[in-house]
Image 1: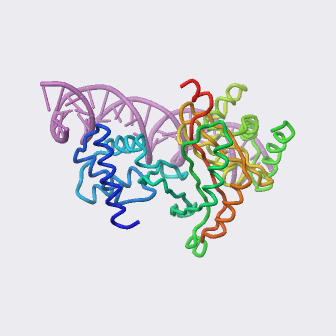
Image 2 (image 1 turned 180 degrees about the vertical axis):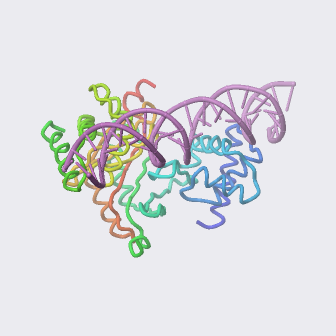
Image 3 (image 1 turned 135 degrees about the vertical axis):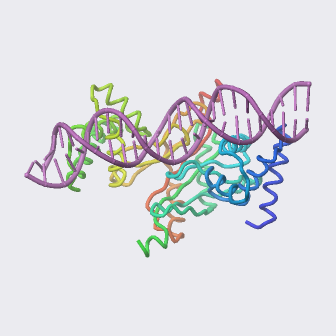
Length: 150
Length: 150
DNA sequence: GTGAATGCAAACTCTTTGCATGACT
DNA sequence: AGTCATGCAAAGAGTTTGCATTCAC
């Protein structure tokens, strides 16, 4: 993801918040910029650490409240990989998204995307009596490093 | 799932535990039978409630320890649906398995299976540099009841 | 007899919430 | 000014762990 895309998410997010009647306080803006900096598969604690490293003193509660707000507005995607708590990442307006592959040895998370997978999911979504709004796919395994150096 | 299949999982599980050098204590056997009774998408608390309803006094810690052991041996599948903690279900030896669709309104979890999805996943698993050992797919949405009676 | 498994309770992590203070519009 | 957001600290849920006791092999 290039810098322009990155900047776009933060500013679009702030714009959407304003349009929805929410306030753009300094702490909230810092949180949003931290999410933007960190990008994919981040935790609340990761955001807090990043903020502290950047000299911000935003409290954990505000991070959780902001994440909940952004999730409710569809501005972040929320998911779990099994360990270390809930993960978040910026949601992109175009609808393009990816999924995750987790190393069960070292905890590393990488992203992938696959059209055939998306097609299969949208096809079967149409067959259920649920109104399917979202989906998660997580692969588990062992990454190349952990396989060669266990 | 019919009764024969159900009994088979519990007895096979006990056999695998013995073969791996673990002891088949009465509490452990009760936990395994509870998992078998409950079947799909169960929580540690659900197992505890079921055990208590059947007159067993097994402690929560033993349930967690047994679940961790069974997971390590591949005898249960572990996953999360976003709320209410970690979920488990019996893993079937044949390799056949299913995935889950969660109602974000009422929390109901249903199972589904889809060959095209499995093919897409095994195809892309072969393309990564991870040794992919397992995968989870979770669809989120609103179930038929919640849609008609919100 | 020996080591594994249990039960209880305490500890821990992640997350949410109450309430008074402070800040955006 | 009025309300929304923040920060702190306490509460809560789920899960893990230490340790003495009990039990399977």
